[in-house]
Image (cartoon, rainbow, N blue to C red; front, side):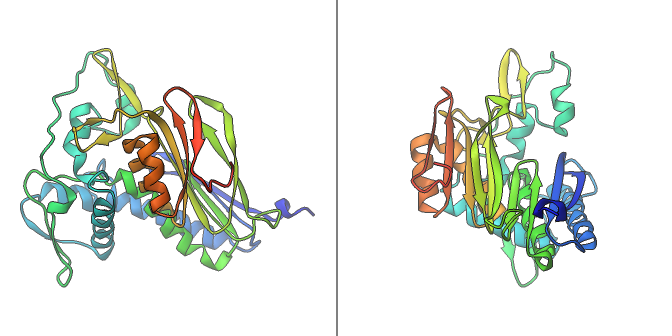
Length: 307
């Protein structure tokens, strides 16, 4: 029997994407189901598209003090840390701008929305994640009235990392949530997990493959999740400096980092910065990046393992 024959496999749909869980432990079925529940729990708590979610309730209570769950407080604290690290480029308080651009519902409905519908004007300057008042001792959060949050830019990576914690007893596993990946252990051939990096310009092609061993991989791109309004293509990656979909010379950025959250955030920030400044930012974080430019060219940071 080959090593691949020993893989436990579990797939499901969550957070508007297909999730694949692989394990080298033959008896990991219960752990894989537990990891699936992590994804559903994160979606239920942090989705802005669910009126009953904790995030929706927090947004509805902006201007008031709200006692939040330990998970919510922890994630908001992470967001503030990444906001500082990125010089404000990572900012979940862009929800009004996302809605203004037309991303005001789950994406499958945005893509099929009536073409005559138009985006409203962006509203930059409505506040940032840094404006939240957070009391750790009480787990109390107060957002100014104008501040409303979208945690989509970090939520999937957070779910991957939480699921990885649930799978620690399996030791040798891989999680792939629509391209947000974490790989632990030696993989089927004993030398890490071999993961393909997709070409954003051609879905059926790969830019290359990398081996992950206790690492995460995430890609941010403006070639997906985009829609048309008034003859103009818009996308989900909002630049908080302008309140509009980002204009960058990078079409996609893939990042390898220690955690899925870090890879997710670094990829988004690097794309906003553009190829040259984005490479410098990724290097400064001790991560590795692969950039595809808007002209179709690609380049990697110095220690990108597929280079």
